[in-house]
Figure (spheres, rainbow, N blue to C red):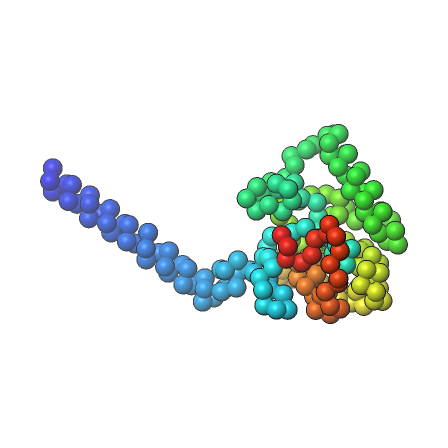
Length: 205
């Protein structure tokens, strides 16, 4: 019995060292060496070097000078601790009411934008944390952003197009724009707009 207990203890110790210490250290070291930025959360920094969020998690931008992302059903919006969709079905009255309210708000905030409104600006993602938009959804907002920043619309469109990412490996996924990176690029190109009451600015969430 004593011999069997000692063998079990040795096996436990070896397993603990291999899987609980050496393996995590090896994988963490490899991740830091090969993908250091992503291993540390793909953090985004403003022009002052301050961390303002992660490229992988969306956040709320309500100020008219910024590109707005998709609706989010995660907590109070883009809450990484409550990642989820609304789970409302297509016949849900709550879903229809929410979408109708978003459509009315978008039309009011973007009177110079053409119809129809891009689907991505009205539909939430399954995770509630989607940090990207299709390029057409970002470009649709260009008239409002140009007016808020007092610049030509073509200049805003140029920044959006410059920040558009193609399909991964040329064929995976769809073209997209990272909303946080794009808003940081807008600030870098045109300067940060003056703060306005009751609006969100880059990095406040």
